[in-house]
Length: 129
Image 1: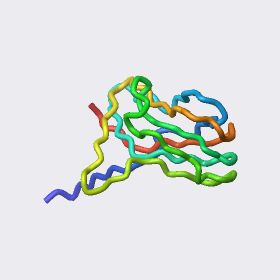
Image 2: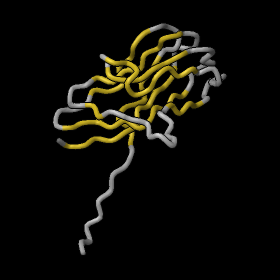
Image 3: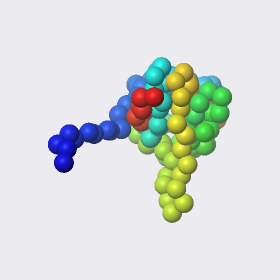
C-alpha cells in the first residue's frame, strides 16, 4: 500500500480582474498555459455597485457561452454583494468542457446596466498534458 497522498484542489486560475457591467463587451479572464488543459469550476463576482439587470456569459473567446449561458445579475443590489456563477448539477449531469493550451476564457457582458468596478475571479484546475 502506498503512503503517497496526492491532492488536487479548485483554486483561482485568475483574479481579481475588473469587469465593467456598464458596457456591452468581452473581458479576458484567463489564457490556458502551454502544457496544460483547464477545467473550470465557477466564477466569483464581487460587485462594485448595483448590477441592475446586467447579463453575463462565460466561455472560450470563440464560444462565449460554452461554460456558462446567460446569467442575470438582478439580485446583486449593492457594492460588495457577491455572486457565485456556475453550472448547477442535477439528476442529469451538467456537461463541461476542458480547455486546451492557448484557449482564451472570457466573460461577455451581453446586457449592460451595472457599475464598472466589479472584481471577478475564475476558479478551476489545470491538468498537465
